Image (cartoon, rainbow over all chains, first blue to last red; front, side, top):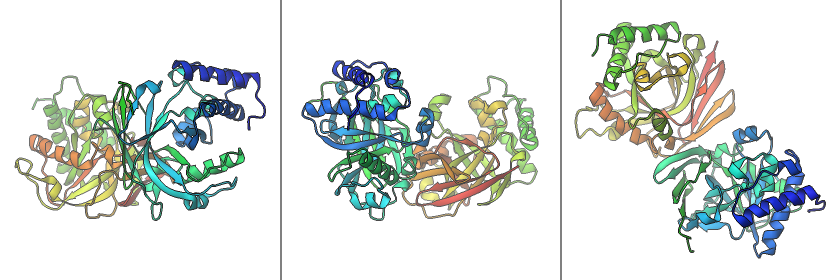
Length: 269
Length: 252
């Protein structure tokens, strides 16, 4: 899919890869690829993905970003974006997550979809998503930016794998049958205090709508959603900076809860 | 009570009646003095024939408490004249600079004596409903300190209540505020101290200290589930998952 790698695209990928390798955030890449050239930004993302795949990782799913109206307005864009989830990014609820793996982490509560069918259809609708979904679980996405101080515009975040980091999944699967995800209340607590609240409707009116957008977008880009993939469908409320080791618990009304336990002691699994 | 209580209450009452902003109160008013001003303010409404129908809770979000440097909720009073029917109109010219926020409201099925150490307000609640509160500070630029806002009946304006339902699990219900059909705020009832019943329990201690009766039939607006938004000529709808919706219409 990376059919035209310009020197600027390669330089942007090198800059972000250096931040990944050194653990030191870098300058934005929009000076190299242009603030609004989305295709160039996805080309950078693909170069970085190829490096991770070469290192033995597998793609296990996708994440959707910019699913809130207010965040899209801030960035001056009308559409969400997406990144890839790799096999080394997943943690189970309660499992220690070492802060060493992250640069500038923030957390947000989401609904994760797990697919039982491919959706290889550039015109996929919500019915295709509903039919292809095996189950949903509560999730906390730990977003991160390789760009210093999160100084991102649309091109920066797309190039940087949609600012993905790690994620934590709950262990209670729910069928979508009879469930209206727009009506799911969400509270994210830090050590027992509510720090972010929201609902399913905050994610593009309904998280199913976000996943349908993703299905179309990745089918058009030649990397359709596959059976077994996990899709982090987008934040249900504002994201919260993570400043130190500690526990974050997301409660999703009717979908159980999920906990992320950040550690700063190496967090051996 | 200081000698300035009544003049300050009169100033706030006039500001409300004339829909004109007034300067903040002088510095140095204590919390107890501020509640005394609020009582003097409400006495003027009662003298004009209005009746007490309940209380409203404020500063019920952790973020707001931190911002205001307080650890207690604040309490205001609701009168029958502040109530708007579900679907009813609000004449915006009667308000200074109104904002709307989505809430849930509880109804007491029996009297609660707040001075009774065994008082259990939660078991006295017999119904819950979605609500929209029109808040309106009488102060210039909607700016106030803790004493200012307590004295000003905690920015109480108007309120509308949807259909009553028996109280089920209200800990984490999705809440939506829409303006002219467009969703503009998303939240959860968990925004209210992590669980709205916590705010209700905090009310009892403040009611005992500041002399608020808690009577059968009274309604208690439990606090905002999202940030407030400005209220212009528009249709504002609040929906709480599992509890239904309530609408008010702002007219010029």
